[in-house]
Image (cartoon, rainbow, N blue to C red):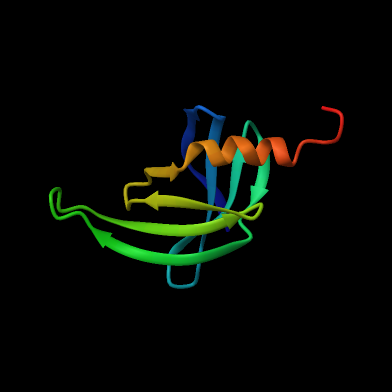
Length: 102
């Protein structure tokens, strides 16, 4: 079952949210990014790493994904918070998938 995680975030490319899918082991995987309400499916999860931030002691998952042929990093922690980088790539996705003449 997919559901957006957390509220939308405002970034230079607009409002963004991420939809995750929970698998049979309860591990969540990102499935789509929504920019200003438009869906951009994640074509492929290229890499997944569980990382321990030694300074804070917090653990998070780092997903390296392909969206519209571009690499995007999504960092998610167990609290439900997430971050995405690089934001300029996301605004370029929206331009690439805009209908002709817009």
